Length: 253
Image 1 (tube, rainbow, N blue to C red):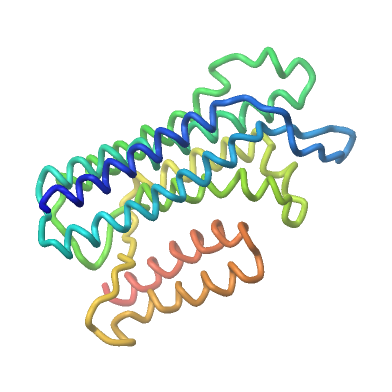
Image 2 (image 1 turned 180 degrees about the vertical axis):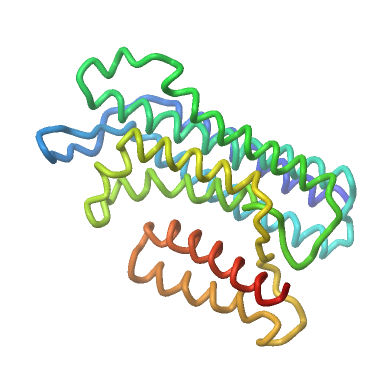
């Protein structure tokens, strides 16, 4: 029974590995969007990679719940969880950014001959996730929050990008496949992971509605955004999480 949470963690790792396989597979372009005389082609498997990262996120939540249920938290489980998270929410999202950068360059003249150094910035995502998780492992436990954006939150944000592109909400395809926008996203998301920004934990405490008010507000925002914005809700909720955390931490400081 003590190893059940660790088995969940390994499922998280397997989901991350499957995500990488899907993301790096080539396939026929499904999207053929004509805007300003250029076309966008995406490998069809990349969206399955996003789904696998989402599944990894669900499992990552469940393994902590199962560990508390069976009262089987351990140092090994903590280390194993971080190792799995590096793959599922660091390497796999980094590969998504790599593919999106490659596709962005491919849409331009002579883009198929893009130099490798132009794609290397995508690897900042797994590097930042590894740094963030290593720092978390050696820091003192803090039930009220985190320092820096958690790797799963950053990974799930990036996983939403191919799904946003698939449905082209509000005609964001050209924006999200602009190389400079992608570079900016890579640097900002990586910085947020390794930063010292105080972020709230989404675990509800016994403090009633008042004690859990920031989390309740975020849940309401998430539900409303999901209904109205579909997959665009993910970046909206991500930004709301940052803003609510900063406002709440400032009020309680």
